[in-house]
Every structure is written in C-alpha cells, then in structure tokens.
Length: 85
Image (cartoon, rainbow, N blue to C red; front, side):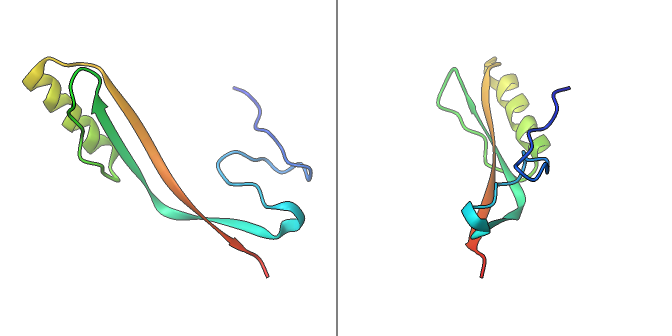
C-alpha cells in the first residue's frame, strides 16, 4: 500500500484540500457524497443517490432488462472553502 503524501509540516494529505498559501483558506466538507452511473451502451442513467449500493441496484436492474453490462460510475463530494480570519 503506498504511503500517503505529506505536506510541508509532515501531515498526511489526501482526502482533504490543502490549506491555502499562508493558511488564508481552509476546507470543510459536506456530510455526503453523490453516486451516479450511466450505461456505456445506451443513454440510460441511474438516478443520483447518496447510497452507492442503491445505484448498483439500479445498474443491475438495467442489466436484467437490457443485457447491457458496462457502466461508468462516479462519486462526487463537495468541498466548501472559506477564508480564515
């Protein structure tokens, strides 16, 4: 397993946004992520959800109806960056 990257203060970085130059900005995260999927064979798209398993069920149902078995999945989170005072 690769070691996490570290910032100049030797703190691990990865799932958080780096603080801005001179620590002028900080990041906070929304409490949820959005999962989406779309069929690579036709124009079908799953209804976006905060439940990844629910999107998988939608894909499985689509496969059962159509025989299409290839999907592009995405997971999106939102970071709100605000200026520190």
